[in-house]
Length: 299
Image 1 (cartoon, rainbow, N blue to C red):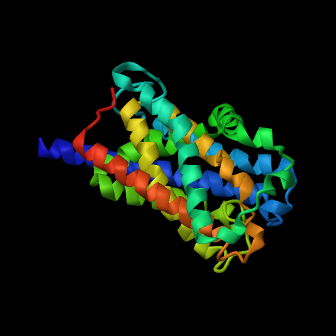
Image 2 (spheres, rainbow, N blue to C red):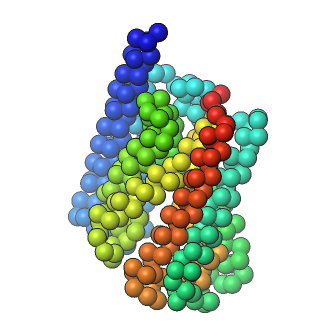
Image 3 (cartoon, one colour):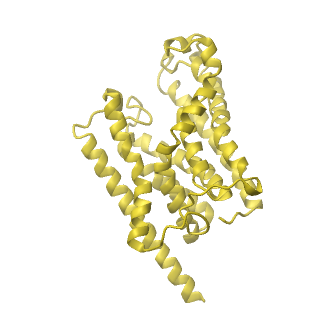
């Protein structure tokens, strides 16, 4: 029995390494070819930004390629599957609702902390500079959530790989807490080319781009806990894809009242990042407590 378990662990490790090699190689080659002149994100046309963003599809493409290479099969649901089905049994619909509305709550909380740290960033008319009137600003979360739901297919490009393949393998190979840290660091480092061209945090901050890469790893560890939980609880990667997409839209009303350029970068824009880390850490802590009390097997 021990020999069987050891062989299974060895197979999982080999498959994981193949997957990671494909994900990093394909994505980084794409980014290098898409931005041969090394332009920064803010200097790109919208068309070029969209073209570069197609690289986000390679994690799920690598998932499919890995299953072809390793002959793991393509089960849609259940243990060791691609987790592409979705079920509302056993209150799994709660995961989808959480995926839709939790990013909004986290965004408002992060903005609130940012204002506590840098109250001088408050500007009651800042939303007007964004081309948004007050009535639209009040329903902005709804528009952002709808946009996120529509854009969840793009986020599926990542979640179909990271949550659909990498994390299940890591959680078999090591303790859960270690899998979250290792998985988050891998996910954060995968973003490194984008971070280096200013996609995630811009370019005008101290320690660019290295501090940005570290920041990305920290955020990926914390956000990864939430995304992995909704995936394991629902048995599907779709709630994670929705949560990821809605989170990226940053659907907080308070965003329309915070002008980060009123003060220096360190005390202005970084205050929102600090707020985001704090609320993600609290949310991740709550999830870990819940997860510790209840174990979920993918059905």
